[in-house]
Image 1 (cartoon, rainbow, N blue to C red):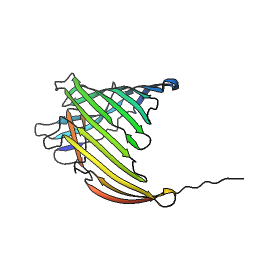
Image 2 (image 1 turned 30 degrees about the vertical axis):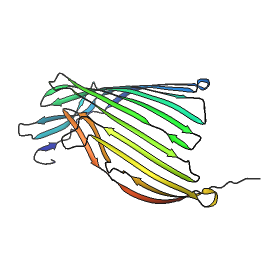
Image 3 (image 1 turned 60 degrees about the vertical axis):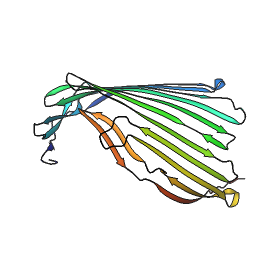
Image 4 (image 1 turned 90 degrees about the vertical axis):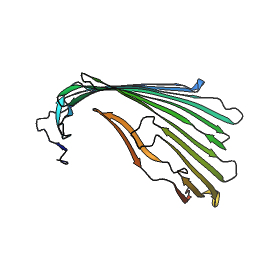
Amino acid sequence: VYNQFSSNSGNPLLKPTRSHSLNVSVYLNKPERMLSTNINGYFSINENSVFSERKTSSQNVSFSRPINKTGSYNSSLSGTESKSFKKFNNWQVRLTDRISANYQHNFFNINGQDGFQNTLSGTFSQQVFANWNNKFEFNPTYTINPSFTSYQNVTIKSIRYATQSLYIPTVIKLVKRMTFEANYSYTYNPQVAPGQQRSSNVVNLSIARQFQFRDRGEIKISCFDLFDQSIGSFRYVGDNYLYDIQEQILRRYFLISYSYRFTSTTTKK
């Protein structure tokens, strides 16, 4: 018993769950075209899955217990393609595309209503890597994550949403023994619970100076979360709930650090 509104019980009659899965992977590499492709497929189905049967009264008192059910499954398909280009004017460029789709067929049960919850989610990511003479590096990545949840045999409204993110790390070494780094990340969720933050802009900056014997020592001054907007947030759908979770994490702060690189070469005669 958690409180006067929520309690659950065990079930000593539960049967063991048996899972069957299949995983297929294909890797293609074409060095002459500087192209590589990875494709992965996965499927699993369970027998005697452990599922929480829940009952809620008109006074919002909730009771649940685990039961066995058979018929849930999960499938996914993902692919990655990376294309590099020949070096030109001291520039090196590489493009990487990632795409994936996941489909989950799971149980739904509340107050005697038996049905299924179907969730189709996906990810598309585009990454660009650019490096100029090992002095300037630029590596932006854009990602979008759509999700659609529907229900069978129960009258519950479908849920759909899509989150987006952008991450841009940058490294500059135009001054001898000096390294400047800037990392920018942006996240956006158009549908959040009231009072929660839809978007965040996080900027991390640092400047480092190498010194001492063979530049093995380094002192760095860093600023994390310049705009003081860093949050941890995610969303998922379970049963007839839409979970919006936002966590307060360490916000803006400054750091001074020193590091020393130890290297040694031993030749055995």
